[in-house]
Length: 101
Image 1: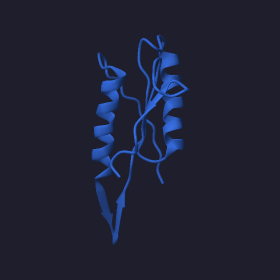
Image 2: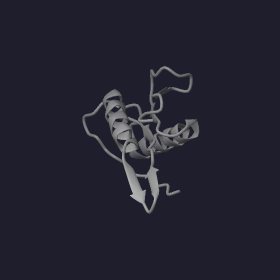
Image 3: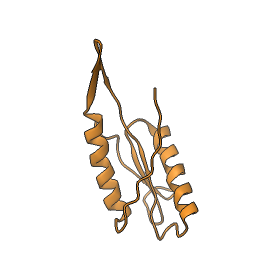
C-alpha cells in the first residue's frame, strides 16, 4: 500500500464547490484500474477540505484540512469530508458517502 498526501488550493471556490469537485475527482479516480502481471489493481482517494474565512490563517487552514483528511480516512475508503462552521455534524464537518465504489 502506498499512502501519499497532497494539497490543492482552489482560490475563489467555496467549500461546497470544492466538495463537489473532489467527489467527482475521487469517483473518476476509483474507476481507474491498472493491470500488472495477472492482477488488476484499483485504488481510492480520500479528501479533507477546509476553507477561508472559517480558517483565516494558513497554518489553521492546513491543520483543519489535515484533521479532516484523517477523519475521512478513518471513516473508510473514498471519502470527501469538509470542515467548517455551520456544517451539519456535531463536530462542525460535512461528509459525503463513499464515492466511486
